[in-house]
Image (cartoon, rainbow, N blue to C red):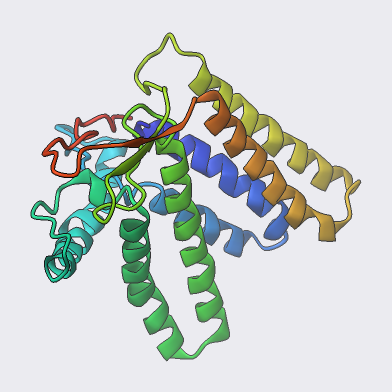
Length: 247
C-alpha cells in the first residue's frame, strides 16, 4: 500500500488499542502511537526521496534506518548462509518475517539497552511502550501489504513464496481501500464511545480492542482475495520495486 494508507490504517489500529490500554496515560499512549507510525514505515526501503520537502520527506528519513543500516547488515548475515542476497535494496528483505524481526531487534538494541542501563523504571517502561508500537506498526505493514497484488515474501530468502491479494493501491476506482478506512474508523469510534459512556468494564477493553483489530484486519484480508503463490527459485524478478509509496 502507499504511505498515506499505511499511516492512516496503522494510526487507527493504534488508537483502537490505546483506547483500552493507555487512555488514562496520555504519555504512554503517545509513545505507542508514535512507535506504530514509525514502525509502519520502516519496511518500505524502496521509497524514493521526494524532490520537494513534504510530509513524505520525514517518512523517507525514517526509512533510511532500515535501508542504510539494517538491510546491509542483514545481507552480510545471509552471505554466510546458503541463501545469500546481493542487493541490500531488495524490497523482499524487509517484507518478510525474518527481515521485520531483524529490524525490530536493531531498534531494540538501539532504544532498550540504553534505557535499561539508565536504570529508571519510567524510562525503561517508556522504551518498552515505544518498541511495542514499532512492533505493532511493522506487523500491520505486512498485513496491509499482503492485501495488494505485489504482496509480501514471508520467508525470504529461505523460501520464494509470496502472499498477495488483488488490491491495486493507486486504483481510485477500487472501493475496497476506502472501505478499510471506514471499517477501522467505525471500530475506533465505537471504542471511544464505550469509554466515554463507561458502559464497558475496564478489564474488558483490552481483549475487545484486540478482537476489534483482528476483525478489521481479517475483513481486509478476506475482501482482498489473498492467496499463497510460489515463484521460481532462481527467478531474478524482484516484484514490488516500483516507488508506490507516495503520500
